[in-house]
Image 1 (cartoon, rainbow, N blue to C red):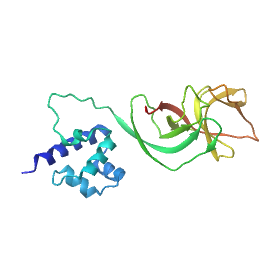
Image 2: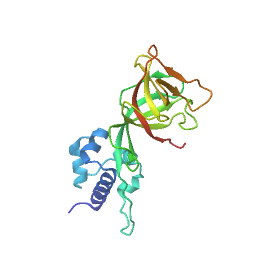
Image 3: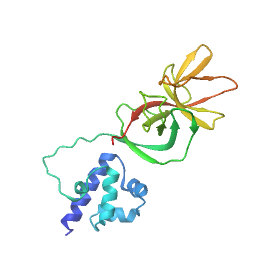
Image 4: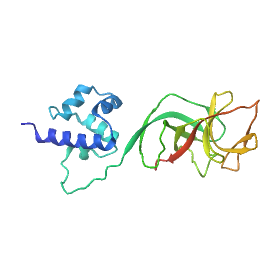
Length: 209
């Protein structure tokens, strides 16, 4: 018979994997843990060290006890539909800065209200889009090459070497990248100062400290 503490952890792990919409293979890869090790935890054959329990608790954004203790049967849990979105780096909301296209990790967001298509996350830097987008906010962007007039886009400028978040205004054949903060000047797009839209900002989140 398997130990009750191993079974408890196994059952809790299965619940949180299902809640997050991922497999044990996904978790093993994300946490850099051998898949065979995770498989043994899932089968209640072995029990993780305290540091691994903490690592998984941080991964699921829960307490350690949520993994190690039995849950009352009368608790009803709402299971939101989470999706995994890569973080691609930092984007300027002031003076444009070099776009960092190296993946820095993932965020998990409730899918409700998010559009279909390829999504990625950028970290806003600067205050040119305040109060709409604050410095340090996580901005979810849908990859696309156009936006409607007045929408906020992630735009490559300076020969496609730098990126910025700006509101796109169209006046006839002219395109202007507008900050929401009146302290900053608009960027007028011309043949000598071209730009390329890489995506539309669709959601902004910010951690509370």
